[in-house]
Structures are given as structure tokens and as C-alpha cells.
Image 1 (cartoon, rainbow, N blue to C red):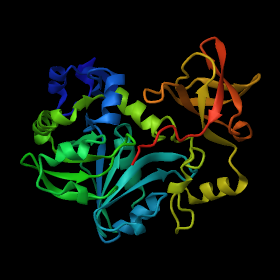
Image 2: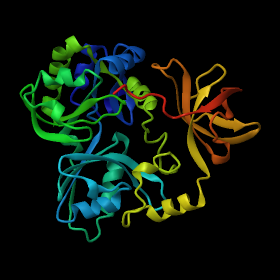
Image 3: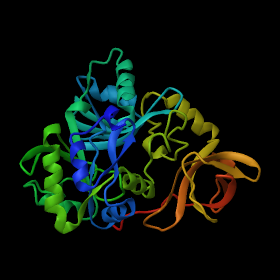
Image 4: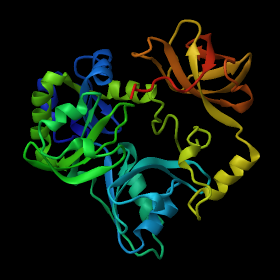
Length: 367
């Protein structure tokens, strides 16, 4: 099974750390090392190291780079300064989401886009198809770049031991290029997907194993552990961060998903603007809500949601939250049933189980 899957440069190294491999979007990646609950706790309380080299990297350069990116994305790239990072969505004309991504600005005519692993080729082809008369060059450099994420309250302390760069000077959603970590040149950004402080470290493929070992060895004192995809998903979910294919998709717009903050309808033309303006003006017919199970059972992605006999939507993500110890989830449902504290029912196998609509602020770190 693993033979046909794509692999990061760390693949042969997972086993020595106890990694259990699964197929994730065509990649052979560890779902866990010590166990999802333990890894989740390590990131919330100390720090965890993730291999996220499966993520995609696309560069956009040229005289019209800024103008072109601003047409592609829902957020406003004109607000960026050099070495700043922007979270955004890229939409189709109908308002559905091509992908959610990060935009790194090197300069006004040079950018890096970091996209989801399952969407790399689709995103790349979509971007190429939109170039038209824009004076830009677009390159998919995903196969040349590896990436580690070090996340948790002790991430800075652990990483600082390996670099002369003062990490505290890198602000949230900013980055610094040519940072030497354990003797290897990297790009370091203060970004992540866990709700905790931390860094994402971009490096050459041939430096990945060395950096992984160096960070885990040096970070032992701070409790740094290797973390798999299982805890990556429970962490992002608790922090109310969307997963493409769950909370965002070709069928779910950023407004329905509750991420209107990243859609700047007051900026000039961008792909999907007309559809999203119309959706906002007419009022949302469905939206994503958070819920807590009243009865027993864990709601999973795709489970149907009911109000009485009426089917009103489906679960986008559901888990037993390791931090809160509660069965919680997110569901896309019809707006008229989305009032706070309202009761809905979720079909878990052959039975309907009650759930209460709650705030989406499941978890936020103390500082």
C-alpha cells in the first residue's frame, strides 16, 4: 500500500520514533507516534514537532505579482509589508473555495503561496489558468521544499537553542528568510495550525532529517515530541481552524464557513466577489455552527443533522476534544436552525443523538 504513496524525506525515519503510517491525500504520513491524546497534550503544554513537508509551495514573481495575487484571493494582499504573511482563501467564480492558503510577501514583485497538500496540482493549474495578460511567472516548487512545524508554548525556547537569530523579534504572521538553524539555512515564520505559538520552518529536502533530529534532541528538556496527523487535526479543530474538504470546499463558501473576516468585499475585483456579495446581500441560507453532544456518542465528518424529522445539514468535523474532555463538533446547517443553545439531532449509526449549539470558541491559548 505504502509503495504507491508520495513520501517526504523523513519517511524512512518515522519508524525509529514509533510513527504509525497512513495514506493522507496520497502521502505516506504518520497519524501518530506516542498516541493522539498524549501528542495533543504535549503541544498544548510544551511543544510538538510536525513533518508538514507534504504541503505545497508555489512562487509568484514579476511586475504584476501583487495585482495578480489580489485578483486570485479573497483577502487584501495590498496591506502586506515585506516579510509578512497573510491567511486567505482562493475562490471560484461561484464563491466556492479552490483552497485556503498562506501568502508570504518577500517584496512587491515576489511572493510564496503555501497551499494544502491535496490541492497542489489543482491550485497550480487554477493559478496558471488565470494569468491572462498579467506580467508574472508562476512556479510550483513543492518538490524542492520541506517543512517542519514546531508548535506549543515552549516552541520558541526550544528552537532558540539552535539559532543565533533572535526569534522573539519575528512577530505573529511574519517571517525571516535565511535563518541558520543547527547550521542549516531555513526560512522561519511565526505561523501554525494548532492555536498555539510556534514556527513553521522551510528547508531543503536534504536538510529535513538533520533538522528533525536536532530539534527533537535539543528540545527534549522543553518536552518537545514528534506529532502525527491525528493530533494535528484535533488541535486545529479545537482552535476553530478550518480543514479544506471539511469546513471549506468547492461547495462551501468562506461566508457559510464563518470566515467572512478573510473576505474583503470592499477591495477591487477578485474571483468570486460577485457571488459572495450576492450571498451576503441575500442572507446566508446555511452556516457552520459548533455543537456539544448532549447524549452519548461522537459525531463524525459527514454524519447527517436533523431537526425533528427534517434533515438540515451535516457534520463537517467531530471529536472528543482532548483539552475540554467533551464530545464537540462543527456542522453546516440551515441558518434558521442555527440559534445559540438550540437543540439539533445527529444521526450516529442507527440512532439520533441530541446536541446543543454552542460558541465556536472552543479553545484559545492563555496569551
